[in-house]
Image (cartoon, rainbow, N blue to C red; front, top):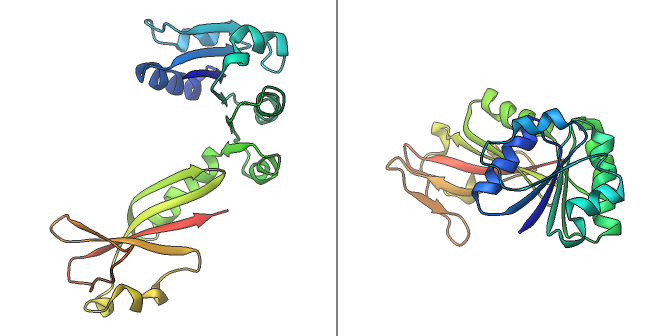
Length: 208
């Protein structure tokens, strides 16, 4: 795919490197030419220096033939404006904006822009860990934050069926699988397994 990445700080550099290694054609736009030193020495993509909300700059970067667009600078408002231009003017289907301010995240999402908020991702991953959960992963999908976590099972629930232990869940949580002591997993889609000693639950939580 042809992908434009706005911003070349540490976050941008990590994204650009990964996408390039996957074989995508990556075009980088940054206002600060010094940021280009963050790129790997073997970077073979295209770079453009300029204001990323300037349509001439974006055209120079190849936005008219772009398949996906990610604005990941440290400036939330700049990311939103660049993402809106990509989505509303150039009709790019895959448009994402990094939003550092958690309070702005919901507001920006109302503009129809898919946002990634590192603050929310970090909080959503740490809170379950601090509550004695393990193996926590936070995923932003279509603007909705999903937290997938593994939790130990209290002794009182051993021998019960999954359908009988809903009282241990919060309102916005759902059990998606049971992880067994031997490392195997049972998906909950079509079965209602009995909880055994050594089992743990894999739970998905949808966060705002």
